[in-house]
Image (cartoon, rainbow, N blue to C red; front, side, top):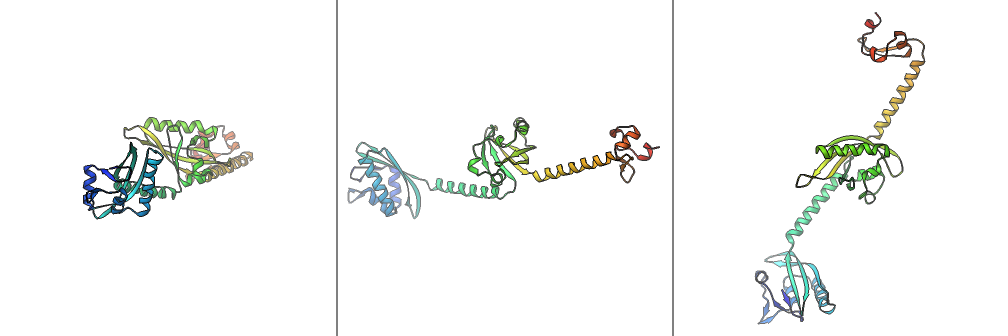
Length: 292
């Protein structure tokens, strides 16, 4: 559509004419060119939006602005659909391009709804979920991940996840990622993590490769579980076993532990010394065979 400086429509292409005919409008009125604002009003554009567009077109002439873009709701047959208007200055005229963006808008809304649903599902999971680039830069983290690291999402995205891994575990974690890159298969492993307060936690992760259309790895998705409590319990059991070991080995009498079928599980230090055999040669034997 081409507008004269007085705002009247001077030229319109065939597709534009067909659209006007479908909604019962024409470019001329009693042989005279119509003003674009009357055309917009007749097409169902709101009074407020008409004034906004009038102001922007006026600026094209007065301030010599190059172009502007506006989205409006216009009639098409018996329905109203979203259109995008692009306008630019051309010599003493204004060129207006109109595009039906209803389908694009609906697809965008559908995509947003799916994204919201996906994020809702992800953020209700207790597991830690993240996505990162091949260089370990984080591109997505769920709420559980943020809570575990004790940082808001905006302070995590863009950082490398290796920043949260202590030095002694960092090389090991990177080697596991290399295995995923080489095999294109998920990899399960455990490593320590240091949160924002300097507290050490233990995580178990499974890294999954995410492929692009050409079959190349474009990023990774990882699902993790905080196993700190389990690790603490394991350490507690180990400590109790060490204490028990010390008590048993301090007793000068021979003490042995065996299963109901008389299979030897272990002896204390005095027992190994009396039998003059290392633990690995004794464990699993029947006590009556060993003692004759």
